[in-house]
Image 1 (cartoon, helix red, strand yellow):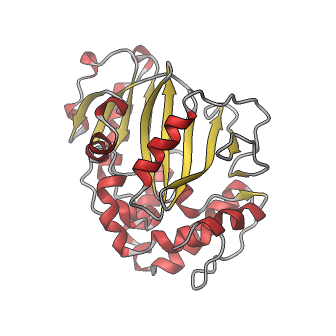
Image 2: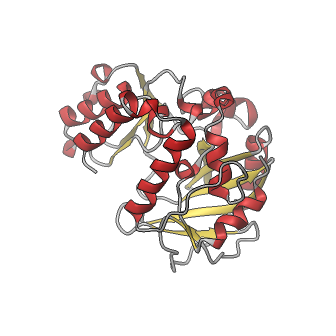
Length: 290
C-alpha cells in the first residue's frame, strides 16, 4: 500500500467510516487484513470471545483503554520505564519535535530512527543520512502528525495521545527484537522476528527457550536463534513492566549484551494477526483472561 492509498484510507476511516459502530468496524477491518494476508476469516465472536484475537479485539474497543495512553505513547512511556527499571534501559533520545519543520537533518548523525509517538509502525530507519530524501521524509512525518491512529483501528489507547516525532539512536539494523507476551504480570511466550526487511518470518519460544510450532501472520522461521544469555534478566524486566496489566506485550532489544526497552504493545497486530495454525489462536486465548 503506497502513501497516497494509505492517506485516502485514513480519510475514509476518520470522516466516513466513523459512523460505523466499533463492533462492526473491527469485523470489517479484520476481514480486510485476513484477506490481504491470504488467510480465511471467521467472524469474531465478541459477545463470548474465546480465541486470543477475539479477546484482544473485545479488549481494544473498550473506551476505558484511554487510560492506557501514557503507556502506549512512545514518549510518555519513557517516564514509566525510568521509574520501574531505570533510565539505563532507554534508547538514547536525539530529539523531540512537534512538527516536521523543526527537524534539522544536518545536525543529526548518519544513522538514526524517527518515530511517531502516537501509533504503530510509523517508523523511519535511516542507515545512511546521505541517501535519505529529506523532503519526502518530512511529507511522511507531516501526514503521521495529522493522523489519529484510533480511527484506523478503534484502539482506544491511541485516541488522546498528543502527536510528536521522536528521534532515537539507531542501535543496529535488523537486530533481534524480543517480544514477550505477558499475562497478568507473567511472561509466557516470546516472539522473535527474522529478516523483517527482506523475507519476514517469525519464531516463538516458551520461557525455557523451546521452539513452538506456531506463528502469527508470517511463516515459521527455520533459522536457529540462540537463547540470549540475558534471558533471565529480560524475563524479570518484563515481570516488572507488565505487572499492572491483564495483558501486554513487552518488546526488548539486545545490543552489545545490553538490554534496551522497545515499547509496550497492548493490542499486537491490532487483534488481526492470523495464527499459523489457527488452533494456536485458542491456546493464546486461554492465557488471556479479560
